[in-house]
Each structure stands twice: as C-alpha cells, then as structure tokens.
Image (cartoon, rainbow, N blue to C red; front, side):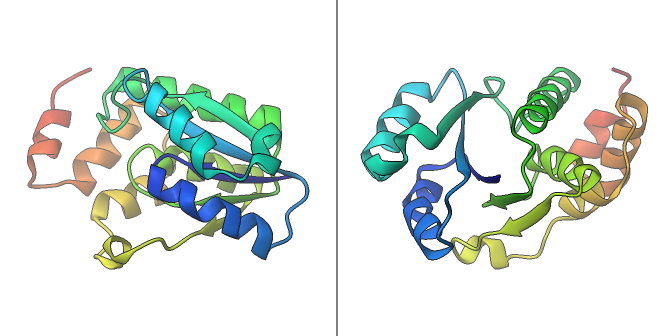
Length: 168
C-alpha cells in the first residue's frame, strides 16, 4: 500500500497529480489535522481532491499544536504515527515535509523498511536543512531522556536547547 501524507492545503493540490502520474491503485491519502484547523482542512480537502479518491482519504488528528515539541506532544504524535503504521503497513510513503514531528514518522518508516519519497513542493525546501531535522531524524531515540539530549545537542546555542535543558 502507498500512503500520501499531507498536512497543508498546498500539499493537497499535488495529490491528484501524484496518483495519476504513478498510476496508484492501492493507496491512502492521510490528511493530518488538529482541532484548530479541522473544518478548513476537511472542506478544502474535499474541494481539491478528485472525487474518485474520496474513499481513499483518511483524516488523522494530531495534538492542537503539533509543531510545539513538548514531551506530551511528542508522545502523542509518536503513538498516533505508530498506530497508523500498524493499521496501514505502507510499503511506500510520499511526504511533503521532513521537519519536527514528521521526523518521528520518518523514524518509524525507517524501522519498518518503508520506502520514503520526499515530494518537492516549493523553494522553501531548498533552504539548508536545519541541524534539528538532520539530528532528530538520524539520532536513534529511545524517548524522553535521549530525545532531550538529541534536541539539546542539535539546537546547541539556541533558545530551544535552553528550553530542553530543563527537566521534564
């Protein structure tokens, strides 16, 4: 099974193209949302996605502010992504982002032997990859203690490293 994981309306615009270009038959469009943006995300998804693919859409709820990397957010997102992998068992995942909580998804995918396809959607992804994206993805993390160390060392000398120096 192929998964196309989207979290922004701009990602949604490319889904129809990807499905047609790669002649996908066995796929799920995973649409990430929060309690803050659910109405807009659902409405826009159904406006943009080809109606032929409506039965292939799976909405997945993330915590209210998924980019805020607190212990509870990380734990919740990790649990959600693990459950998603268990349910779908994807062989390939098309992703539009690699930073922050997406790196938790990438870690699970790597452990499961899932092929990851990073879809370039615009110029912002040509910016240098922040150390956190590299360190967070590449550092095997057991969880809290090692996560704290990985983030602290990746963001060394920044406010984020300072915030993670406090005990959870």
